[in-house]
Length: 389
Image (cartoon, rainbow, N blue to C red):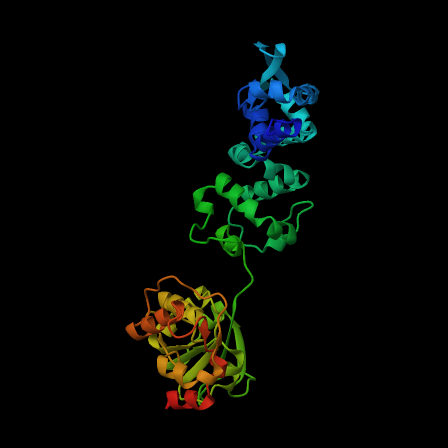
């Protein structure tokens, strides 16, 4: 029998809660009441074949609290006059909340609504969209509102998160709640206080005008004749923040970028050249060094789909970059060192050369071998030397 049971009625109301509809009703009056619940009961034949089961079902159903039943009387040919429930109604929001045990939670949400209306009315649309998330944040609500108020008073502050002076708030609190703060700040701050080009949680500081931890760029001088930093020996392993690297005026004509640290450290000497330890995905900081555009820029990554994705991304900043040791000949000559790429990229890339694109297609469509990968550190060192001659 698939007749509606009390648990089924409660589940229908619970779904309204999980969709946020009951909390929205608590503050903006939707949905309208009374609310009809779905009810499936016995058919006429069940009164003949399962009469005792029908009586037990009715007794169980009418014991359900916080709902109202609509009844219909009929004359059954065997059982005589019978009275069966044909509809179930929840008359008020209070009944619905009591039915699923959420009355206190709704009161708490109404308190958040009133507080937000008084302090940050522009956030009320967010509350109606995300009422359950608001409840989850209830114990931190005042501190979150305080962060918003601080940024309204100090737009694009030019300080580190650590320097936000709000009681009970530290940089860890802000970092932990960046996702909700992004949504809130975009609602309440003027457009001029937001860097709309900075997207994603990692760009939070830049988006709202905070100072961020400097990205560091690591490189080696490959020519002993190049001027080094004071106190550094030749071919030193040097790390600078991105701004300082961008301001360099090195007399170099070639710049190599490699993703593997050992390849970076073992890169052989080259005249008027440096080698940079690449950062994988994300070249924004390196792009600040405009002087690189005047150099012969060469990229060495893994021969796999993600290696070509990284190359494609680098070309979005430096269209002149060329790849090396990422070709079919290198791949086939190092067959003994082939490995497996577990989650290859499949999307199209628009910045590859014809030869690179052909090899990328062979890799992403598994034409040579499923998930084929040749890591750059497995390429014979003599191949590197030969490529640099």
